[in-house]
Length: 323
Image: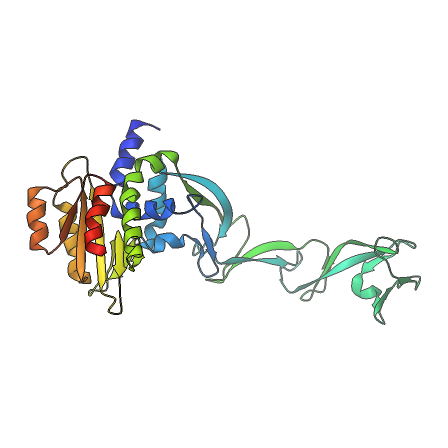
C-alpha cells in the first residue's frame, strides 16, 4: 500500500465515526462487515445505522475506507435494482411468451415408460392414484413405471401452451415491470478489516476496552460506542456511555490520543455534545496529556480530565473514579 494511502488512513483514524466503526468491527470474530437483507429496503449495513449521522452516506463511507486500505471488500451477492426508482424491492415473474401475461399454470410432464405416452400430470391422476390415459395401466413406482419428463405451462389469458416462460422483474416499490436487459445489476460487497488497519488503529480500542471492562466490573451498564439523543433531538456519539443504579444517570467518556500533547479541540467537541445531552458526568481521557489551554477549557466546561501515558495509567486513574 502506498504512503499516500497510509497518510489517508492516519487522517481517517482521527474521525470519531471511523473510530467508533473500527472498535465495533474489531470486536467481531472474524473482523468483517456483512450486509443484511431487509425486505423493505434491500441490502443494508445495520451496524452503520448506529454510527453514521447520515445513513445515506453509508456507501461513500465504506468506499472511502476501502480506497485507503482500512477495509478490503469481497463480492457477497449481486442484486437487481429497478431502472425507474432504484429500489432493491424486486421480485421475479414468469410470463407467457405469446401474450406476456403472468397468469400461467405450471404442470409436471409424465412419461409412461412402457408405452411411451407423455402428458401433463393432471391427465394421469384419478381415484387417488396415477394411471396412463393411453393404456390404462396403473403407475406405482417412479423411475420404473414412469418418470418426470420436464414441465409444461398453460396461459390462462390466451389459452396457449408452452414449455419455457419468459422471466421478468417487477418493482414492489413503484410497480414498474422490467426485463433483465432494462434493470440495473449491482454488486453487493462484504468488508473485512485489513491487517494494516488492525495494527495502526489498535491504539483506539486498546484504551476503550479496559475502561469498559473496569466499569462493567463496577456494576455499570456500558455501551461502546454510546449513541445518546440530545434535547435538540440530535444524536451524539460518545466512546463510552454508561449508567448505574436506579436513577440511571448517564456518564459519558471520550478518548483523545496524540503523539504529543492533545490540543483543546477534543474538549470543544465534547462540550458541544454534553451541552445538548446533559449527562451527570463527563470524562475526557487524554493520552499522553493535554495542552494548558485544553486544561483551562475543560475546567470551564465542567469536563473531568483523565491523563495518562498508556492504558495502564488510564485504568489506574479511573479505578478511583468508578470503583
